[in-house]
Length: 387
Ligand SMILES: [Zn+2]
Image (tube, rainbow, N blue to C red; front, side, top):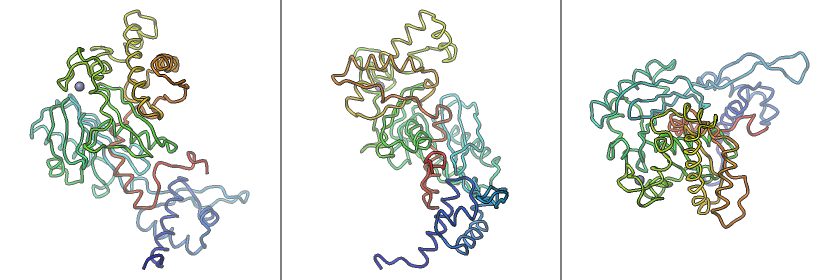
């Protein structure tokens, strides 16, 4: 058996190569595939026919050929052949998104629903998800699964909440969601979801620390394009390192954790980020002072984490769109004062996906697994890999 490639495998490889080729280029003609994949015309033609019959690809207009004035039939993948859903549970609302095989939004909805760690509440959430799923322009059997985050750490297998102090939902299991939704479901730590989005948007990204700066700070370590979960599921929970042991009380019960210095509340109180940064950029003294303190604290955090893990740092979350190049230069100045090494200004950058990054990210593991099954290496397109 070993080393022998059966005719069945060759057939499957051809089919996967053709599908993958169309996926990455978005649109391709039969002629393109003949040249690029070095397959015979009958092989390409029969595979295209079979892929089309199975609903994986479709004809999509015409594209130019090398021969002037001649056009060829273009093939594209059926983008919603499979769909995944991401659900973010927050204290006052539930955010839902459905994405297609390109990780692109099919539909999105936010419902106001006040959290309570009670069966009735979870049933109501599931009712909203069911309604959202039923309104999608695809039949239910095309839904791969539902990724769920609840501002909490998930167990390694994604079947329970290992630590959910913000919403007080530690121990919650996925069973109630699966029973009500009749779909595969799994929990995911929200910063890990955000980091998944970043990986999806950045095919060149190998190693990084992702810092999510939203209502509460959180992080994820990306190692060789994988999110490190850790032996007990609490990797990169820097937010509970005590930066000021006699500081403010953290929701975890300890004092002066990074969360108390870098949460949105610590920065803006009850003000919106938009209003706060409007004041910062117009030189309002109290807002500028608060922002300077925040940047100084952030620099201290990055300096320590960077000494420990010398990789790129990505700043994401709701705060990310407000951070300017000048702010990043300020971070480097502060970091240089704290590090013994000559730190170059090349390791901090802003997230490429500041909005919907959590909901999209927690749905992506389903899309990635599906694409792998179809023979596609996800997260790369023609534009991105330069082919
Ligand atoms: Zn804490």
